[in-house]
Length: 481
Image 1 (spheres, helix red, strand yellow):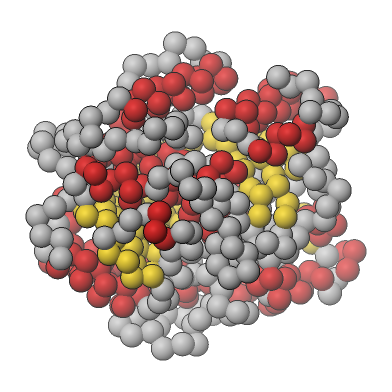
Image 2 (image 1 turned 90 degrees about the vertical axis):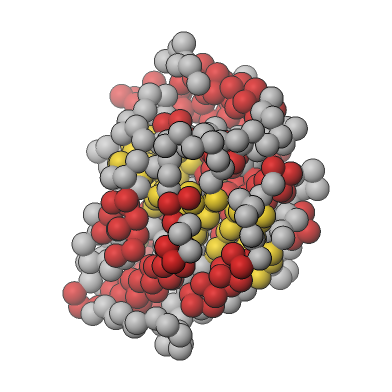
């Protein structure tokens, strides 16, 4: 891909969108991917996705976490330091991962299961359906959380039991046993470190797992959370569940190594959204949206730290390029980062977009935004609403410790009242204010950044056919173009 002729953010994004459409609409159906070693063969593709894991591994600078398998993978592959989900909610985020479309366009606006009952629009073609015509065998094990399953066309479908990491490894072996000599794509969804009720499932029996406990009194609480005894207990539980996910990753790597497939497989380790705590999950602050992304494989140069700003719509285009597979007849919302995987700071990767609408069906709080290297801009579409709490977060000891303090309660450095009642626009200088506490939207010195990102966000919403744009026909945002 040639360099973009313009450095203007809007021009650059329009150029990349056009290139994305040309690249994948014109791609031959089963063109072979050429790997770094020059072998004319297509790699296997394996996605290992944690549930609610933030940047809490040693590879990302968290010395108290115990995640040796992820840390080793980062040393043997590429670690992205600026990878973002677009919506910090399980079903909605996974829908973006599977489709390459923002959830406001793919129809999976919120949770798929039970009474929430949201699902993909009928015309949407998930990655698994796009890889099958290119000769890939496809499978999923563990947490799925997107609907309808029939739209994916899985060759192997073993949903559920995502907290039993040994069972997931066994199901992966069954998938491989039936794959023979075809390239394959496998998606393994773990339930860890998601909450299980008010805890994290650590009291259950976990076959094949070495229990790794953490002492609450020694825990260093992330700065975006209240530092008190209930929170330290919960964060300690979270770290234990995170370690269990890491042990599951180790089991999968052992299977690939034993079958001599480790170095023929592009392995993606990631998370759907940040930790299930206030300020993180269901928010699009960095605590909920900035996530681990580690890629190991034949086209991932070992030990690379990649600072490109990438987001989950970029995953489908990237995997299609790895596979030499054709994209859908409609345009995707991301672009492939395959050709910049080994570059520490590639040019033109300096902006991503955010779009959240629902978590649970009762949690309606649509937010849109743009994140650059310096700024985060958020547009809260209905600021008259109080920010709704996810049921498991509301019941958590961490949130209840904030509630007990009433007006003096704080979520990290953010007053609880500010957390619950948000203005129409938020602007943060991430470099100076990483916890996103000081809203600069009404500070004159930042008015140029505000106007630029306001227009960038509006253009992104138009480009991706955001249905909620209809509400901007009148009012202060009506003249943005």
